[in-house]
Length: 300
Image 1 (cartoon, rainbow, N blue to C red):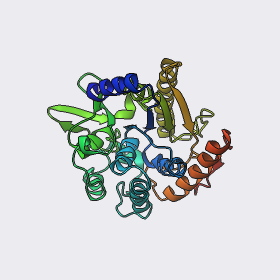
Image 2 (cartoon, rainbow, N blue to C red):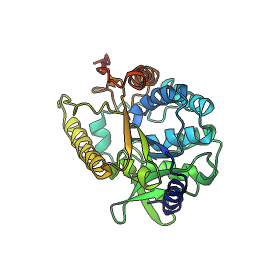
Image 3 (cartoon, rainbow, N blue to C red):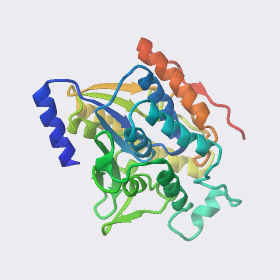
Image 4 (cartoon, rainbow, N blue to C red):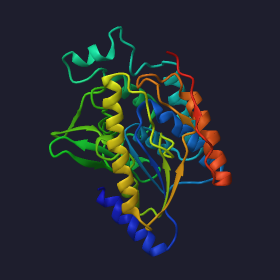
């Protein structure tokens, strides 16, 4: 846990007796586009965070917003996802070989992480986490002890690459003699960490609708493995909510869509996902009611 920010947050709350708001960004790879729409709904209502916590793609989104919180940060994030939707760059290029064949080949990952790193270097103007406009922390999984590791200071892009090193998709990241992979392995939606950093109001920007456990079509071994991984993360998330108890006010924003069937490497639906999430989140923040998620048309 980032002790520096956690301690400061608790002291700040005790002295002020005021609300401290956190935005928590879950992981979710290409589905992270929905968080752009959620943020838009929050920004339009003038809801501002005091703390930002993220995991994997949510760490990237949270950091992009934390560079300039508000409309400028939102525009920066929209630009990133617009580039990805247009394939500029292709951070997960399409291969001629089927995924199952690619998985059997030698090598630590399917894709080269340098393309993602270059995109972040182009779009993020802040070099170190301490220089962000808001307190920020992101989680990665430390392989040496299979435990979560928190970055709340140091080189920003190194931390984001470690947090977003999705198993099999990107290789693990080595920093200062330790090896890290995607934070979602151990902490998909770090709401407890936001509370420990001093937040007592938490807006959760989760890429799933969270109303129901999805029931995907398990036509391939890869589908079963992916769904099992999702279920493990979902259960950990539910345990975190139980641990929060009455310590915090938690507001879950809806994703607005069902996303079963979207390939993990398909970023072309980003603008559509963001728009559906905006409509659903805008409705929820206005009425307190969740709209039924909109099914997306998936090409066979």
